[in-house]
Image (cartoon, rainbow, N blue to C red; front, side):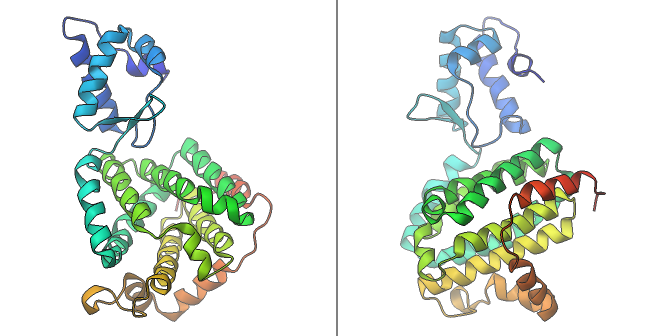
Amino acid sequence: MEPEELFRIDRGPSTPERVAARIRELISSGALPPGEFLPPQIQLASSLGVSRSSLREALTSLEAGGFIQKMHNGRYRITALAEGRMLPPLHDVLRSEPSLVWDLIETASVMVVEAVRLAASRIQPQQVRRLEECMEQLERAGRNRRYFVREFNRIYMNFYETVALATGNVVYNQLGHAFMEMLAQALPHTDRLFLVQEDINAELYRQHLDIFRGIASRDPASAARAFRRHLSYIEEKLRLILGEEEGRGTAGRPSAGKQEEGRRGKAAASAGRRGGGRGIGKGPARAAAAAAKGGTAG
């Protein structure tokens, strides 16, 4: 659908309300996903067929409702419906109780694993291309430590926001964005990970290449296994950084990674290590995407 058709409304006495209602509808349906920007105001007013004053009034209303956020450059970013209510208090709690990061990881072992599985079943070609772009950026980060430290969190968020879109689930698309924001901001700064493993940038690229291959080839089980291995790896490194007792969560609870290892057994753990040992070749994400185009749904 062309942008003009996407935003077009019928003008009337309550035009600002109609504009706001149309944008809310697009946000709720996933057509305007969290993290993306609305078009510049001149372009948006033209697409809607309304005056700049009507548009500004609608945008003010949407911002007050927590649907959008005005950025420093004057553009408006789509926020998750739950983001405004969930993130500030949880950020405060995480700062005062750092051990709650294990609860976040445990939640990811349920929420994000299932999202990866759904994405592998439902992903559309344009979403495969977006994941491929993320992988190309991660590949560069895998070879360049400085680029990794500066850009990893942004690429990580883009990757999992695309996974959320690929689920085709509007509710998860909203909740998943807010959750990934919490997880990204709760983790220690990326450069601290170099203290425990110097080549962590290359390792994280390899892990996400496995996740990407599973999703792009429409293999839900493979994609879910690859994400579980990634999550267990992150948990292991965080425990080294934060000095937590190995293999234990808060209040003596087994960690999410240890629970998964116990369920899957030594064979799956061995397969994960073999999968993580592959070197970084030239353009493997592009090759995986090309191979997936000729594959069958898993």
